[in-house]
Image (cartoon, rainbow, N blue to C red):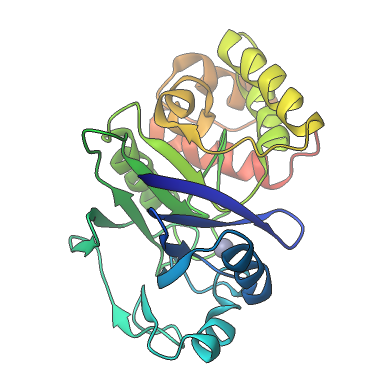
Length: 259
Ligand SMILES: [Zn+2]
């Protein structure tokens, strides 16, 4: 049976574990010790690592895990230390009975890739998007451009709405506060905010979300909405005239937003 589990690490990171039965692959193991503790307590056999981009909170555990599993396969963008199997957008990976497509999504960083687990009869698809897309938000543009961010959002929007969105940080509540500022009249945001508050009060992750959730309430996937364009212009003094300019203005606004 397929399983997909977020393993909390550091302050607000998630290392995603995915696999079938006792076999497991880990996405973005920033913290090797947190990963090993989870593997031990869940009796899972580590098969390999999937890396989305070079930031240390996603790659910091690679060396530790390679020490314990010297033959470990590490997939990811080529130049990162510890990668044994460089991969790039357009490739397909077969991991056990799972098929994953690699999507090139430069934006947050230029090397950023995402892994899309294709759906099967017994499970929906799942997107491991690192720091490109967050629940109700997106990653900061440290290296890429708004144009590239728009391309990444379009690539995600083309996936089936039932796709599970497995992002690498628990930023949902803060992102929803911003989403509400960007689109105050969207009832899906309030509804999601209530759901996320209940989950956090119960000590639960708000993830995975679904692509349908993001299409309904994530302003960075909704920059084509005239209401958002009007709001970002009114609130920031921007003069966005189209979806791309709205997306760029939203990202700048969010960079300085204090809910
Ligand atoms: Zn990052």
